[in-house]
Length: 294
Length: 344
Image 1 (cartoon, each protein chain N blue to C red):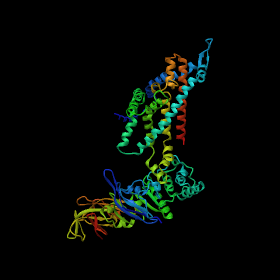
Image 2: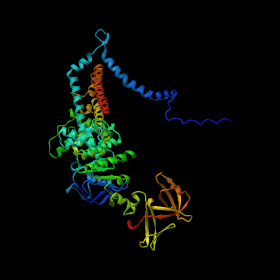
Image 3: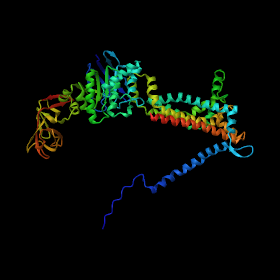
Image 4: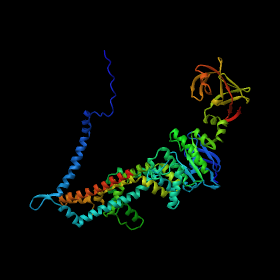
């Protein structure tokens, strides 16, 4: 009779080659879906706007739709208002969310918990509800107007249907994510690092500028990048709250496609929007990589 | 001259938790005083109050007669070295040290000169361009010390600075820190829960418990002449035996010793090195284990009721497990109601 050798404990992750296809199969479906629903439409859109038939019907490299976009004042105005809205939103978001995050990070007790709940609340409100709430409050004959009227004051100049309408809506919509990302970054700043700075003579502003801000620069980049990418290509809020002309790229694309029935220019606008977003994305990746390199 | 005076300082946190209770202390010029106590004894809270990171609920603190009680940390003439080093990882060593000097508006060449001097002092000359993450734990702690010293504070505050270091490095650094402190003659308040550190470094030790002072004395006095059973048990190894005194005789599980104090319960304290053993078939204690450390031996003993005692012996080979021994204390103290009532 021979003794059976004790079975070796099975590793949690089996590196055996024969098991590798299982792992690949697990990621295959999402990879396929991303390739099908994201990558392919991008390639297809770029191809359809760059390789088009000329007057004779021959297929060839053709930049006419892009030339049209960048020579059309209306399109330029729409791109400009989109960039302006994105920039203003990013600045306002930082101006609002950084103080909120600093307050939440360095305060204790019940009040900060309520403030945090209020800051996160917009995350649970759909954009369309937010837009109509905005109209009912700040729009013509909205709650603010009624209140002003009741005390005999003149009506406000409503931001509704002006470029400031989408700015207010988008900022409100993006506050939760921005606060959460900044708060996560601030969580990595040790209390003792701050106390050490105060110990060597730094006042509160100097602590913020020289110690906290450099330590959360990555989080600021992430927060702003996420916000910028979302805002640049946003649709619902600019569509419901923004002016008819100029309009942001989201509503512009929709109108060009549906109302003007001009798929080629709509796709061209989409490709240009995508290029801006990818530029923001690359800037973000480069900045984060450089910061990590330091 | 820099004298730190703490008068009747208390700190009550929400709860209410009394972290520091009516604490008073005067630290003389150039003196190194250790705040020693177990976790939760209030020593770190007290240090943080001196540094300005906590406001006292009541009491007053002065440095050279100037009231600093309500001053924020940035306006106090103190320098603190934190347990976690608290170096700014986005700055290199030079920038860490120069930051405080820049805030004071010193010219660049003076900053460079001061930083190089202090790096030399802590044995890190030439390390200015290094990132703090490229340094070892010991080097990081030296940078943290240098960052405080470069500003020439009147009072140096050390908050368990060696707690995160290994034993070997800790012993080396505490000698270096003590040398630097004595060379600069800087008044220092040092928090630790390590009695070895306190005994090795301090001019005086403040033993704290539950926010109060148990004893303030020189290290040798605290060790040899503890005023309370807590200090006796906390500093070094001590045999603490609870028993009863009747007609001047302390008894516990067969152990009987003459202690001329009034009748009643008492706690007897005997250091292992002051407890001589005498082999006897009718001894009151039985040897449980003998450990030979080369230079000396440590004998674990059990009284009849299982009370465990320790005795330090010069010749451990003379004793073995199971052997009966009699106890001959060469020095002992007795405590009652948290105060010493007898000492021989």
